[in-house]
Image 1 (tube, rainbow, N blue to C red):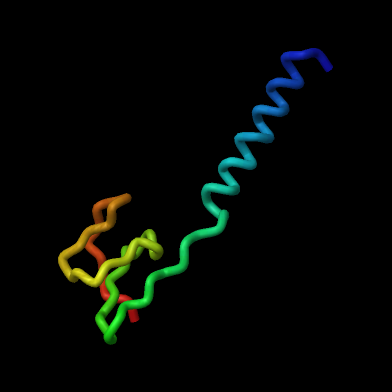
Image 2: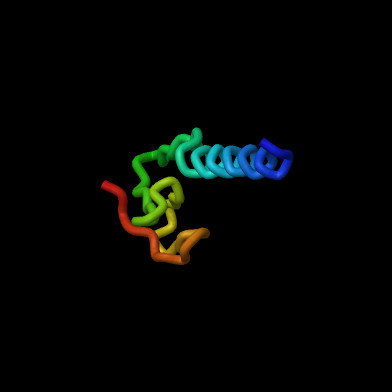
Length: 68
């Protein structure tokens, strides 16, 4: 293998590792609402939560829905 093939291989492995970490890495725990407050979450990004019924997702902008 020459140097270019080694750099491409290592770069590709690093990119695959980053993508796997980004999508499947450790996430923060979902906060629990105090005093029985209702929690609203994004339908697409369930880790985005709020106790405000008018809140929107900070990633996609969708309106948060009530979590069961």
